[in-house]
Length: 247
Image: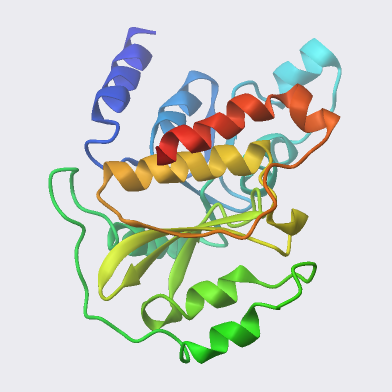
């Protein structure tokens, strides 16, 4: 246990100082999952990477539930249900290429500026934005198309793309400078903020703040999602985390 504690201590002391990335190359179980959980970004491979605190055999012995390792803690589960994984790829080669791409947006530590690239014009022209966003507030649209027409080359890298899809968090460049983008996604829940979206966005704001990434925020929401489930789940507490991160 002392070894675990030493790793967790280092993860914690380096949090916000240097970017910490975890690449899960196979099964990761028990206490070992907490170190990736303390890092900034987790990369997994669908069908290969697995993360869980207690494995299927323990689950079966304690609860009687039959579940496979993939169903319990596979990449797809953590990408869509738990929000633990920030990126899930199809192959190890794709995953390593994606890690390199992410590092291209980040400084080596919090004391330096992110690496600037050559500026590239965004997609289309500004007039297209009027056609993308409907005049009727009851109509939905894909905010990703809007983002593509604001950032360099229309290129952006979405973080946790399959989790809490009512908010979009992405890395991009503006005039060559790396930035973070946060946008309500009207295609899902009309862009309302719920518990998961609040947690996702708050964490991304803190990440960008730590590593000197300016934020571009696109707001189109009626507010927080109403309902008993959200209130009982603690939407006040989770929603406040997003307000705190911005403030």
